[in-house]
Length: 413
Image (cartoon, rainbow, N blue to C red):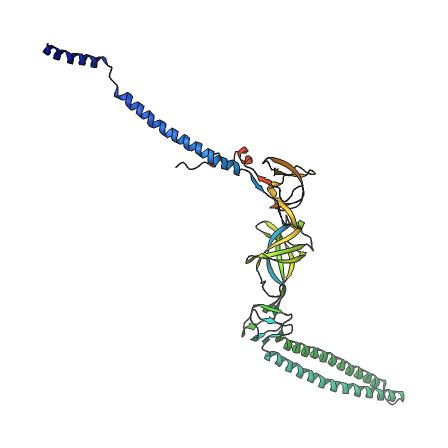
Protein backbone atom coordinates (compact mmCIF):
# COMPACT_ATOMS: atom_id res chain seq x y z
CA UNK A 1 0.00 0.00 0.00
CA UNK A 2 2.74 2.26 0.80
CA UNK A 3 4.36 1.58 -2.48
CA UNK A 4 1.13 2.20 -4.39
CA UNK A 5 0.57 5.54 -2.78
CA UNK A 6 4.03 6.67 -3.64
CA UNK A 7 3.39 5.78 -7.30
CA UNK A 8 0.04 7.52 -7.64
CA UNK A 9 1.08 11.00 -6.35
CA UNK A 10 3.43 11.91 -9.15
CA UNK A 11 0.80 11.01 -11.66
CA UNK A 12 -1.69 13.33 -10.11
CA UNK A 13 0.84 16.15 -10.09
CA UNK A 14 1.64 15.60 -13.69
CA UNK A 15 -1.99 15.60 -14.65
CA UNK A 16 -2.64 18.90 -12.85
CA UNK A 17 0.31 20.48 -14.48
CA UNK A 18 -0.85 19.42 -17.88
CA UNK A 19 -4.34 20.79 -17.23
CA UNK A 20 -3.08 24.43 -16.57
CA UNK A 21 -2.45 26.48 -19.77
CA UNK A 22 1.12 27.77 -20.23
CA UNK A 23 1.89 31.57 -19.98
CA UNK A 24 3.39 32.86 -23.21
CA UNK A 25 6.67 34.78 -22.74
CA UNK A 26 5.83 37.25 -25.58
CA UNK A 27 2.72 38.58 -23.75
CA UNK A 28 4.78 39.59 -20.73
CA UNK A 29 7.29 41.48 -22.84
CA UNK A 30 4.42 43.43 -24.57
CA UNK A 31 2.96 44.63 -21.31
CA UNK A 32 6.37 45.83 -20.16
CA UNK A 33 6.95 47.72 -23.42
CA UNK A 34 3.59 49.49 -23.15
CA UNK A 35 4.41 50.69 -19.65
CA UNK A 36 7.69 52.24 -20.92
CA UNK A 37 5.87 53.99 -23.78
CA UNK A 38 3.24 55.53 -21.49
CA UNK A 39 5.75 57.05 -19.07
CA UNK A 40 7.36 59.56 -21.57
CA UNK A 41 3.93 60.62 -22.78
CA UNK A 42 2.81 61.32 -19.24
CA UNK A 43 6.06 63.22 -18.58
CA UNK A 44 5.71 65.41 -21.66
CA UNK A 45 2.07 66.12 -20.83
CA UNK A 46 3.02 67.20 -17.32
CA UNK A 47 5.81 69.47 -18.54
CA UNK A 48 3.55 71.02 -21.19
CA UNK A 49 0.80 71.68 -18.66
CA UNK A 50 3.29 73.32 -16.33
CA UNK A 51 4.79 75.47 -19.10
CA UNK A 52 1.48 76.74 -20.37
CA UNK A 53 0.15 77.34 -16.88
CA UNK A 54 3.20 79.41 -15.84
CA UNK A 55 4.60 81.01 -19.00
CA UNK A 56 1.28 81.29 -20.79
CA UNK A 57 -0.05 83.48 -17.99
CA UNK A 58 3.07 85.66 -18.16
CA UNK A 59 2.65 86.04 -21.92
CA UNK A 60 -0.98 87.01 -21.52
CA UNK A 61 -0.01 89.52 -18.87
CA UNK A 62 2.82 90.97 -20.97
CA UNK A 63 0.85 91.09 -24.21
CA UNK A 64 -0.59 94.50 -23.22
CA UNK A 65 1.97 97.33 -22.89
CA UNK A 66 0.75 100.30 -20.87
CA UNK A 67 2.25 103.64 -19.90
CA UNK A 68 1.23 106.69 -17.89
CA UNK A 69 1.34 110.14 -19.56
CA UNK A 70 4.61 111.98 -18.99
CA UNK A 71 4.88 115.73 -18.46
CA UNK A 72 7.77 117.37 -20.29
CA UNK A 73 8.88 119.27 -23.38
CA UNK A 74 8.08 118.28 -26.95
CA UNK A 75 9.04 119.65 -30.35
CA UNK A 76 8.44 118.88 -33.99
CA UNK A 77 11.50 119.59 -36.08
CA UNK A 78 13.18 118.95 -39.42
CA UNK A 79 16.46 117.16 -38.96
CA UNK A 80 19.52 117.44 -41.16
CA UNK A 81 23.27 117.10 -41.02
CA UNK A 82 25.77 119.84 -41.75
CA UNK A 83 29.28 121.18 -41.37
CA UNK A 84 30.67 124.19 -39.53
CA UNK A 85 32.59 126.90 -41.38
CA UNK A 86 33.73 130.46 -40.58
CA UNK A 87 31.11 133.10 -41.18
CA UNK A 88 33.72 134.90 -43.28
CA UNK A 89 37.03 133.81 -44.74
CA UNK A 90 39.37 135.24 -47.36
CA UNK A 91 42.31 133.96 -49.37
CA UNK A 92 45.18 136.42 -49.09
CA UNK A 93 47.36 136.28 -52.19
CA UNK A 94 50.25 138.02 -53.89
CA UNK A 95 49.54 140.78 -56.42
CA UNK A 96 53.14 140.97 -57.63
CA UNK A 97 55.60 138.33 -58.71
CA UNK A 98 58.73 137.59 -56.77
CA UNK A 99 60.26 135.46 -54.10
CA UNK A 100 58.43 135.15 -50.79
CA UNK A 101 60.98 136.77 -48.55
CA UNK A 102 59.30 136.11 -45.20
CA UNK A 103 56.09 134.59 -43.84
CA UNK A 104 55.37 135.98 -40.39
CA UNK A 105 52.39 133.80 -39.37
CA UNK A 106 51.53 130.15 -38.96
CA UNK A 107 48.29 128.17 -38.97
CA UNK A 108 46.28 128.94 -35.85
CA UNK A 109 47.75 132.39 -35.26
CA UNK A 110 45.35 135.23 -34.49
CA UNK A 111 45.86 138.38 -36.57
CA UNK A 112 44.46 141.89 -36.51
CA UNK A 113 43.24 143.82 -39.54
CA UNK A 114 46.23 145.68 -41.08
CA UNK A 115 48.86 143.43 -39.48
CA UNK A 116 51.91 142.57 -41.62
CA UNK A 117 51.83 138.86 -42.39
CA UNK A 118 54.25 138.38 -45.32
CA UNK A 119 56.87 140.15 -47.48
CA UNK A 120 57.94 139.61 -51.09
CA UNK A 121 61.43 140.52 -52.33
CA UNK A 122 61.13 144.09 -53.63
CA UNK A 123 64.54 144.57 -55.31
CA UNK A 124 63.19 144.19 -58.85
CA UNK A 125 60.34 146.64 -58.26
CA UNK A 126 62.64 149.19 -56.64
CA UNK A 127 64.80 149.05 -59.79
CA UNK A 128 61.73 149.68 -61.93
CA UNK A 129 60.92 152.72 -59.81
CA UNK A 130 64.41 154.16 -60.35
CA UNK A 131 64.11 153.68 -64.12
CA UNK A 132 60.67 155.32 -64.15
CA UNK A 133 61.92 158.28 -62.11
CA UNK A 134 64.89 158.81 -64.47
CA UNK A 135 62.66 158.68 -67.52
CA UNK A 136 60.31 161.19 -65.96
CA UNK A 137 63.21 163.54 -65.21
CA UNK A 138 64.33 163.30 -68.85
CA UNK A 139 60.87 164.21 -70.09
CA UNK A 140 60.67 167.15 -67.73
CA UNK A 141 64.00 168.44 -69.09
CA UNK A 142 62.69 168.13 -72.63
CA UNK A 143 59.62 170.01 -71.55
CA UNK A 144 61.78 173.00 -70.60
CA UNK A 145 63.40 172.98 -74.03
CA UNK A 146 60.12 172.67 -75.90
CA UNK A 147 58.54 175.37 -73.82
CA UNK A 148 61.43 177.72 -74.73
CA UNK A 149 60.84 176.91 -78.40
CA UNK A 150 57.24 178.00 -77.99
CA UNK A 151 58.33 181.34 -76.46
CA UNK A 152 60.78 181.94 -79.30
CA UNK A 153 58.23 181.06 -81.97
CA UNK A 154 55.67 183.33 -80.34
CA UNK A 155 58.13 186.30 -80.32
CA UNK A 156 59.09 185.68 -83.98
CA UNK A 157 55.42 185.66 -84.95
CA UNK A 158 54.86 189.00 -83.25
CA UNK A 159 57.81 190.51 -85.05
CA UNK A 160 56.74 189.17 -88.45
CA UNK A 161 53.30 190.60 -88.05
CA UNK A 162 54.76 194.04 -87.37
CA UNK A 163 57.03 193.83 -90.41
CA UNK A 164 54.23 192.71 -92.69
CA UNK A 165 52.05 195.53 -91.42
CA UNK A 166 54.80 198.02 -92.34
CA UNK A 167 55.39 196.34 -95.72
CA UNK A 168 58.90 195.48 -94.56
CA UNK A 169 58.48 191.69 -94.89
CA UNK A 170 56.73 189.34 -97.18
CA UNK A 171 53.54 187.56 -96.23
CA UNK A 172 55.30 184.21 -96.56
CA UNK A 173 57.57 185.07 -93.66
CA UNK A 174 54.54 185.70 -91.48
CA UNK A 175 53.03 182.37 -92.53
CA UNK A 176 56.22 180.54 -91.60
CA UNK A 177 56.23 182.19 -88.19
CA UNK A 178 52.64 181.07 -87.55
CA UNK A 179 53.48 177.47 -88.51
CA UNK A 180 56.61 177.44 -86.34
CA UNK A 181 54.63 178.53 -83.29
CA UNK A 182 51.98 175.85 -83.88
CA UNK A 183 54.67 173.14 -84.19
CA UNK A 184 56.38 174.26 -80.99
CA UNK A 185 53.11 174.20 -79.09
CA UNK A 186 52.36 170.71 -80.46
CA UNK A 187 55.72 169.46 -79.24
CA UNK A 188 54.93 170.77 -75.79
CA UNK A 189 51.55 169.03 -75.76
CA UNK A 190 53.18 165.75 -76.83
CA UNK A 191 55.73 165.98 -74.05
CA UNK A 192 53.01 166.71 -71.55
CA UNK A 193 51.27 163.45 -72.55
CA UNK A 194 54.54 161.53 -72.22
CA UNK A 195 55.09 163.04 -68.79
CA UNK A 196 51.63 161.97 -67.63
CA UNK A 197 52.25 158.44 -68.93
CA UNK A 198 55.57 158.21 -67.17
CA UNK A 199 54.07 159.57 -63.99
CA UNK A 200 51.46 156.80 -64.15
CA UNK A 201 54.17 154.20 -64.73
CA UNK A 202 56.05 155.49 -61.73
CA UNK A 203 52.87 155.45 -59.64
CA UNK A 204 52.16 151.85 -60.66
CA UNK A 205 55.68 150.83 -59.73
CA UNK A 206 55.32 152.42 -56.34
CA UNK A 207 51.97 150.65 -55.83
CA UNK A 208 53.64 147.37 -56.74
CA UNK A 209 56.30 148.14 -54.19
CA UNK A 210 53.56 148.48 -51.60
CA UNK A 211 52.18 145.08 -52.63
CA UNK A 212 55.44 143.45 -51.60
CA UNK A 213 54.24 143.91 -48.01
CA UNK A 214 51.09 141.86 -47.41
CA UNK A 215 48.73 142.88 -44.61
CA UNK A 216 45.77 141.07 -43.06
CA UNK A 217 42.51 142.34 -44.64
CA UNK A 218 40.41 141.35 -41.59
CA UNK A 219 40.71 140.29 -37.99
CA UNK A 220 40.65 136.55 -37.64
CA UNK A 221 42.65 133.34 -37.47
CA UNK A 222 45.11 131.86 -39.96
CA UNK A 223 43.33 128.68 -41.07
CA UNK A 224 45.63 127.71 -43.93
CA UNK A 225 49.01 128.55 -45.46
CA UNK A 226 49.56 127.81 -49.14
CA UNK A 227 53.11 129.16 -49.66
CA UNK A 228 56.48 128.82 -47.92
CA UNK A 229 59.36 131.19 -47.40
CA UNK A 230 61.70 131.20 -50.39
CA UNK A 231 58.99 130.13 -52.82
CA UNK A 232 58.78 132.09 -56.08
CA UNK A 233 55.32 133.49 -56.71
CA UNK A 234 54.06 134.20 -60.22
CA UNK A 235 51.21 136.69 -60.24
CA UNK A 236 51.14 137.32 -63.98
CA UNK A 237 48.18 134.99 -64.64
CA UNK A 238 46.47 134.35 -61.29
CA UNK A 239 47.07 135.68 -57.81
CA UNK A 240 48.79 132.91 -55.84
CA UNK A 241 47.30 132.35 -52.38
CA UNK A 242 49.70 132.75 -49.47
CA UNK A 243 47.40 132.31 -46.44
CA UNK A 244 43.69 131.99 -45.67
CA UNK A 245 42.19 134.02 -42.83
CA UNK A 246 38.85 133.11 -41.26
CA UNK A 247 36.67 134.88 -38.73
CA UNK A 248 36.05 132.09 -36.22
CA UNK A 249 34.29 134.26 -33.64
CA UNK A 250 31.04 133.40 -35.44
CA UNK A 251 30.51 130.06 -37.16
CA UNK A 252 28.05 129.26 -39.93
CA UNK A 253 26.25 125.93 -40.07
CA UNK A 254 25.63 124.71 -43.61
CA UNK A 255 22.94 122.03 -43.26
CA UNK A 256 21.94 119.76 -46.13
CA UNK A 257 18.14 119.50 -46.25
CA UNK A 258 16.35 117.09 -48.56
CA UNK A 259 13.93 118.42 -51.13
CA UNK A 260 11.10 116.67 -49.25
CA UNK A 261 11.75 118.78 -46.14
CA UNK A 262 13.02 122.09 -47.53
CA UNK A 263 9.45 123.33 -48.04
CA UNK A 264 8.92 123.18 -44.27
CA UNK A 265 11.71 125.69 -43.61
CA UNK A 266 11.17 129.43 -43.30
CA UNK A 267 13.81 132.12 -42.91
CA UNK A 268 13.78 133.32 -39.31
CA UNK A 269 12.68 130.03 -37.72
CA UNK A 270 14.56 128.76 -34.67
CA UNK A 271 17.24 126.16 -35.13
CA UNK A 272 19.93 124.44 -33.12
CA UNK A 273 22.55 121.76 -33.53
CA UNK A 274 24.48 119.24 -31.47
CA UNK A 275 27.96 117.84 -31.97
CA UNK A 276 29.12 114.24 -31.95
CA UNK A 277 31.40 114.91 -28.99
CA UNK A 278 28.79 116.95 -27.08
CA UNK A 279 25.43 115.22 -27.67
CA UNK A 280 23.76 116.89 -24.68
CA UNK A 281 24.68 120.49 -25.51
CA UNK A 282 22.60 122.61 -27.89
CA UNK A 283 23.91 125.52 -29.94
CA UNK A 284 20.92 127.74 -30.90
CA UNK A 285 20.58 130.03 -33.89
CA UNK A 286 18.13 131.45 -36.43
CA UNK A 287 17.79 130.33 -40.03
CA UNK A 288 19.05 133.21 -42.17
CA UNK A 289 19.32 131.78 -45.70
CA UNK A 290 18.28 128.89 -47.92
CA UNK A 291 20.51 128.73 -50.96
CA UNK A 292 18.43 128.42 -54.14
CA UNK A 293 20.95 126.23 -55.95
CA UNK A 294 20.91 122.63 -54.71
CA UNK A 295 23.55 119.94 -54.73
CA UNK A 296 22.91 116.42 -56.00
CA UNK A 297 24.52 113.47 -54.23
CA UNK A 298 23.72 109.90 -55.26
CA UNK A 299 20.64 111.14 -57.14
CA UNK A 300 19.38 112.91 -53.98
CA UNK A 301 18.67 116.64 -54.26
CA UNK A 302 19.89 118.56 -51.21
CA UNK A 303 19.50 122.27 -50.37
CA UNK A 304 21.82 124.24 -48.10
CA UNK A 305 20.21 125.97 -45.11
CA UNK A 306 22.46 128.39 -43.22
CA UNK A 307 22.38 129.84 -39.72
CA UNK A 308 25.04 131.45 -37.53
CA UNK A 309 26.23 130.66 -34.02
CA UNK A 310 28.48 132.77 -31.79
CA UNK A 311 31.81 131.15 -30.93
CA UNK A 312 33.49 133.43 -28.37
CA UNK A 313 35.55 130.73 -26.67
CA UNK A 314 36.62 129.01 -29.89
CA UNK A 315 35.20 125.58 -29.01
CA UNK A 316 33.53 125.30 -32.42
CA UNK A 317 36.00 124.40 -35.15
CA UNK A 318 35.90 124.18 -38.92
CA UNK A 319 34.35 121.13 -40.59
CA UNK A 320 32.84 119.78 -37.38
CA UNK A 321 29.84 117.54 -38.11
CA UNK A 322 26.60 118.95 -36.72
CA UNK A 323 23.24 117.25 -36.21
CA UNK A 324 20.86 120.09 -37.08
CA UNK A 325 17.25 120.61 -35.95
CA UNK A 326 14.96 123.24 -37.49
CA UNK A 327 12.10 123.69 -35.00
CA UNK A 328 8.66 123.88 -36.60
CA UNK A 329 6.76 123.91 -33.28
CA UNK A 330 7.49 123.24 -29.62
CA UNK A 331 5.84 123.22 -26.19
CA UNK A 332 7.13 123.02 -22.64
CA UNK A 333 5.81 121.17 -19.59
CA UNK A 334 2.93 119.41 -21.34
CA UNK A 335 1.45 115.90 -21.10
CA UNK A 336 2.73 113.52 -23.74
CA UNK A 337 2.11 109.88 -24.64
CA UNK A 338 3.78 107.59 -27.17
CA UNK A 339 2.62 107.90 -30.76
CA UNK A 340 1.49 104.26 -30.76
CA UNK A 341 -1.04 105.02 -28.00
CA UNK A 342 -3.01 107.56 -30.07
CA UNK A 343 -5.46 106.35 -32.71
CA UNK A 344 -6.73 108.71 -35.41
CA UNK A 345 -10.24 107.88 -36.59
CA UNK A 346 -10.21 110.08 -39.67
CA UNK A 347 -9.88 113.66 -40.79
CA UNK A 348 -11.98 115.99 -38.68
CA UNK A 349 -12.65 113.35 -36.03
CA UNK A 350 -11.11 113.44 -32.56
CA UNK A 351 -8.28 111.10 -31.72
CA UNK A 352 -8.71 108.31 -29.21
CA UNK A 353 -6.62 106.44 -26.67
CA UNK A 354 -7.37 103.25 -24.80
CA UNK A 355 -7.39 103.76 -21.04
CA UNK A 356 -7.10 101.02 -18.40
CA UNK A 357 -9.80 101.54 -15.75
CA UNK A 358 -9.48 100.80 -12.04
CA UNK A 359 -11.11 97.40 -12.56
CA UNK A 360 -8.60 96.51 -15.28
CA UNK A 361 -11.03 96.94 -18.16
CA UNK A 362 -10.17 98.87 -21.32
CA UNK A 363 -12.19 101.83 -22.52
CA UNK A 364 -11.74 104.24 -25.43
CA UNK A 365 -11.39 107.92 -24.58
CA UNK A 366 -11.43 110.90 -26.91
CA UNK A 367 -8.49 113.28 -26.53
CA UNK A 368 -7.34 116.58 -28.02
CA UNK A 369 -3.83 116.33 -29.40
CA UNK A 370 -1.25 119.01 -30.10
CA UNK A 371 2.32 118.77 -31.28
CA UNK A 372 3.27 115.42 -32.72
CA UNK A 373 6.68 114.07 -33.65
CA UNK A 374 7.92 110.61 -34.52
CA UNK A 375 8.03 109.48 -30.89
CA UNK A 376 5.44 111.28 -28.77
CA UNK A 377 2.20 113.26 -29.00
CA UNK A 378 1.07 116.20 -26.89
CA UNK A 379 -2.25 115.63 -25.11
CA UNK A 380 -4.09 118.91 -24.50
CA UNK A 381 -7.34 117.50 -23.09
CA UNK A 382 -8.83 114.13 -22.22
CA UNK A 383 -6.10 112.59 -20.03
CA UNK A 384 -4.63 113.12 -16.60
CA UNK A 385 -1.21 112.33 -15.24
CA UNK A 386 -2.57 109.38 -13.24
CA UNK A 387 -4.30 107.70 -16.17
CA UNK A 388 -2.86 104.57 -17.73
CA UNK A 389 -3.02 104.22 -21.51
CA UNK A 390 -2.52 101.16 -23.65
CA UNK A 391 0.47 101.56 -25.94
CA UNK A 392 0.26 98.21 -27.74
CA UNK A 393 -1.27 94.75 -27.48
CA UNK A 394 -0.25 91.33 -28.75
CA UNK A 395 -3.52 90.76 -30.58
CA UNK A 396 -2.34 92.54 -33.68
CA UNK A 397 0.53 90.16 -34.23
CA UNK A 398 -1.59 87.07 -33.62
CA UNK A 399 -4.35 88.25 -35.90
CA UNK A 400 -1.95 88.96 -38.69
CA UNK A 401 -0.20 85.64 -38.30
CA UNK A 402 3.09 87.27 -37.35
CA UNK A 403 2.91 86.11 -33.72
CA UNK A 404 4.91 83.13 -32.56
CA UNK A 405 2.56 80.49 -31.12
CA UNK A 406 5.44 78.86 -29.24
CA UNK A 407 6.50 82.11 -27.55
CA UNK A 408 6.51 81.69 -23.78
CA UNK A 409 7.09 77.92 -23.83
CA UNK A 410 9.96 76.81 -21.59
CA UNK A 411 12.80 74.88 -23.16
CA UNK A 412 12.10 71.19 -23.10
CA UNK A 413 15.69 70.05 -23.24
